[in-house]
Image (cartoon, one colour):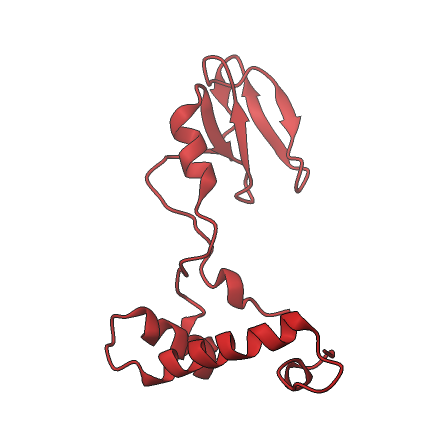
Length: 140
């Protein structure tokens, strides 16, 4: 083994059993990806990951986590709101705010008094999927 990708696939007398077992698997995946001719196939996805990963930066990849907040909003009572900077927060029970607090992310005021939402906060609807695009291909 070693730190660089080239060293990882280079076998020598000190190679461990995991490295030895992975080489044919990696070779098979690469061959399948590069020989794929159908545009709508997993092979085409693998080819893009190998040859042009930047082309997938706006894509949702099969191994990415889904937008769990949308799922949670659907099963919990109460309501979800967003501060002026878009950070989401939850109000339980009836779902209408009864106190003014501060956003845990940015510190701006959130909530409201007497069941009236602060004017600069917004209600969050459950009709948008916020799965992060390019999850596996973010820049450092």
